[in-house]
Amino acid sequence: MNTDVITPEGYAKLQQELDQLWRKDRPEVTKIVQWAASLGDRSENADYKYNKGRLREIDRRVRFLRKRLEALRVVEYNSVQEGKAFFGAWVTLVDDEDNTLCFRIVGADEIYGQNDYASVNSPIAKVCIGKRVGDDVIVTTSESKKYWEIESIDYRVRKS
Image (tube, rainbow, N blue to C red; front, side, top):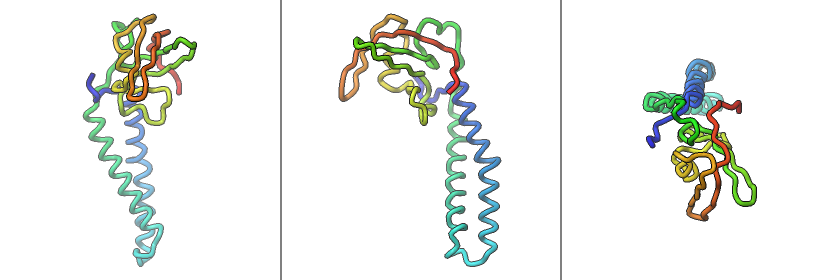
C-alpha cells in the first residue's frame, strides 16, 4: 500500500497544526523577536536568541507540513470495505490467552501520540489487511512470532 495515505481525520489534524503554527504561533514569536531585537545588543539577549531559534523551528515545520499535505492522499471509507480489515479500520485481535489488542490502521503520519494507532506499514497492520472476522493472523517481528484471531473490525470514527 502507498505510504502517502491518510485518513480524513488525520489530514484535518495536520492541517489544524499547520494553521496553528502559521496563523497564531509564528506571528506571536515574530513579535517577541522584534521586541527583543529593539532592546539593542543581540549577542547577550536570551529572549532574542531563544525566540529566533523557535521561529526557525516553526518555519521548518511549516515547510514540512505544506509539502507533506500536498503529497498525501486522503482515503475515505467505502462501504465495499465492510467486513474486511482495510485502511482506516479499527481491528480487535485476541490471542490464545484471551489478551486483546485494539488498533486503527492509519497512515504513517498519524501514529505519533496515538497508542492505539498502527501504521499501514507496520507488521501487525500488514497481516490484517484483507482479513475477515474469525481469520487467524501471525505477526512476525525480529523478536518474536505471535498468533492472533481477528475478533472485530469496525470503521466508525472514535473520539480520542
